[in-house]
Length: 255
Image (cartoon, rainbow, N blue to C red; front, side, top):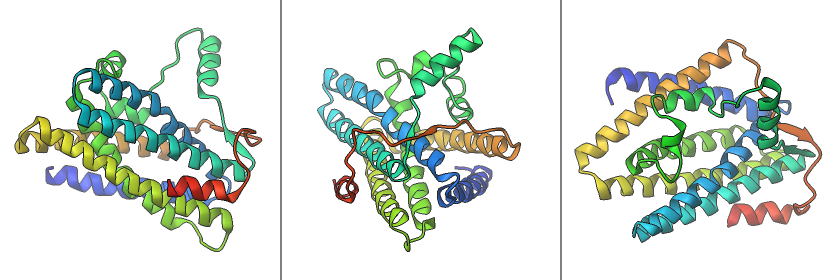
């Protein structure tokens, strides 16, 4: 990573850390923030499972096992955030229905990429990023950067939560557990790169995706600073198919 990219990484990371910490602490923005995390974590499960099946078909049992564990972790993370929402008598919206309604209203297919991912994957068509087609190095490099940074971001948000209130204290424990899982995900993805590339090639891949992540974060911060409205991802009413007890949250965190 060159010096300029490193400086931009520090600046953008600091800005995002401030924004997310504020959003998770504020009772007014916490539900939407939790819903966003639930949708992102749960939404990645089918993608990872499809990659797991592809890796197994290609004979890479080591990678298939890692992807299987990764998918299971992400499913559990989604459940942790869903439980935290339920404690607030909230639940995440049905994102597929929202996109369908928007498409019907606009009379065209809705663009599924957020400004962040549009910048992060600039130059890649959607078809190139599907699990059956994505280049393994693209998946490993991009996801390594995301998982590595997510571990720090979740830990930072967790530490911003107060411990003198039961809901916040439980959420803090859950987010610290998630942060620890993300460290493990980043570790296996880096090892996967090492299994396929020479050390200099690994460094180049990581630097390339670090630069893309910096550009994506700057685009996201710029959008926020312009005051663009954020879509609501949450609605009133807790889902009826989740356990009511605090024991559930403890089990999910410990799993």
